[in-house]
Length: 96
Length: 394
View 1 (cartoon, chains in turn brown, cyan):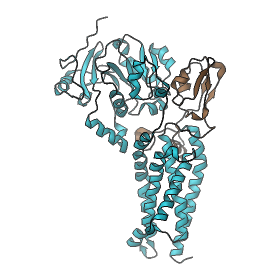
View 2: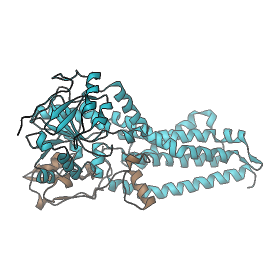
View 3: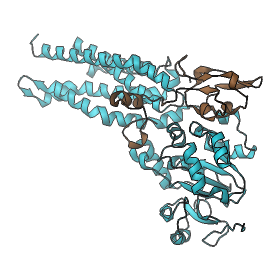
View 4: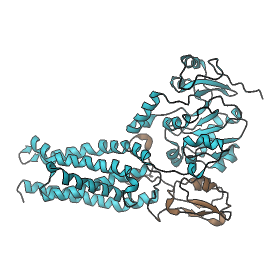
């Protein structure tokens, strides 16, 4: 299953990549592959912006607008003007 | 360094057999004092604690790898109610089997549902389980928030004195914890090397057996129908609690409202089809859409929900003679309002899926919210026009 196409904010700076393979390891949607000792993006539309790759890239070769892909959280932030956070522990929202 | 002595405080070397919660063992840990970062005696009320191990840094609770009936009942309650919001395990270090200084350390969240998913797969293994304080949230969601994060992992390694409990310097973190854990930072700050384990706890055994190697399948998240199905009660539940009572009240009042006051008979008879349509739109958005997710065309959740909603309303209107609406205004209202309600409810499911990102949801909201508001206003006008017609004002 894929979500909307051409929408992810994932950015990859190949010149900084050392080909360590960490992004391939942590990505839950097989967005990356290693070819010629560098990472490359296999399918950008599979990215869900979880930021696992960004957090674990020691070389700063990746960037993404991290956030919750949760309508309830985003609507809450529109109403309250705060940061979108899925406040699952409060029991007020349906997310997660 | 003194040699570690692992003892079982009920006097048996191998501990109680699986699924056996020995009363003797339970009584015995009342006398244990809590160690810094090691769960204290309050845990001993839990049926899943089957003993304790003495380590250099103090006693560590030993947990069962079997789920009791009470665990399963609690899991069920998590799936249908707010019970899940306070289903916690005390953070700290736990033992499974009889781990020693060379045993693996598995990191988990303190949502008991997550903890149970892990421990039930560890039968026959001797491992440590390091439970982080994620405020009772599962690994993936907590990693997204940062509570399952580098800082918490480092502080938990420190407070449990993990470097004294084990001789090696490797920990297995579930792959879905990666959004919150920076493996290179953990390595630098603590000396512990983070190995990302498989996505699903059930693959841990194979992962360890393969020499800490996860296959592509173990690394990939899917979203099969059973996973979607178990999430639906918590989609239906809030919709029915938050919106439906107000909606039902509004409908009863609207149809009951007559020039001479609110009439009970009119309220009930007039609103009945619409109370049912309301239920159907909740079902279409919160049940049909999630379950049939990959089979409903288009990638947008708002569109999927709208399609499920309009089809459901058409089917019900066409097949149920009792509900046949003769008034054009009410008919148009039904086709307009209920599919939009389904669409809105289906959009909420983006928070529960394994593949939707924030940019996509933002785009959906940008387009759909004006449509929801516009549609609701037109719906309201249609109802008013119907009412004025009924009262023979126009």
